[in-house]
Length: 292
Image (cartoon, rainbow, N blue to C red; front, side):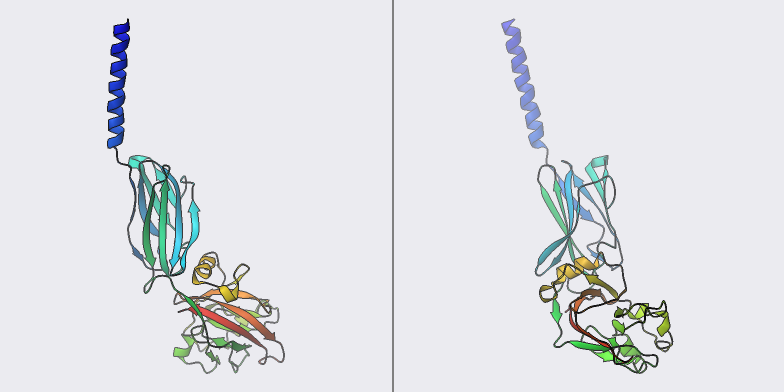
């Protein structure tokens, strides 16, 4: 019996050695592959992650010279944007265009259940990834739009230039990102203290802009979390990912507004003052920071 037990123990030790040896020979794999490293704006990201240990988390970052900021942390792989595929340890990636809607540099970070980390970078849009927002030299006063277009009620965020709708050239129209109208509360004109993108002007001003051929589609939204003085590209860009409005209204002194121009430049402005008076002399004064 002792001899049999000794043989059994020897066999078990040998089996354990073989098993351990096989396990040591296995190489843990965590790899991210993407269909495109550079995407046009408005395109979803496709790819896959290979993970032999199983994924613990996937995180999407926007990356700038100042660092990177998380846009989404994914830990549930039963649904997209990362979907587990039990075949060959694969996970499908489909990052929707809404999550990466701002031009710039992005990073996917995957961490598996053993703590192994893998990253992959990609770029949305053309030009230098990421960016810096820079304040214009001076504050800008935009006057209320009037029916004959006879006031400087449109503004280009790139340099703070203002133009009269009635006399703006086609080239000037192409620069305009904001229009101010101190509305009278009707459906046609909208609420008071309204700044809107040119493509989203209220119906009551249709005659004013009837001669225009260029209307920029500016995304605009009020921010409750950004401080104008310390605003960075990363935090403005991140907030714009959840912004789906193209005008802001009922503005008050101190309000901070984020925006993205049709050209893909992001920025932020702060309301310094709003002056009410006779239509056409009403105005809003803002300070602007925009992506350089």
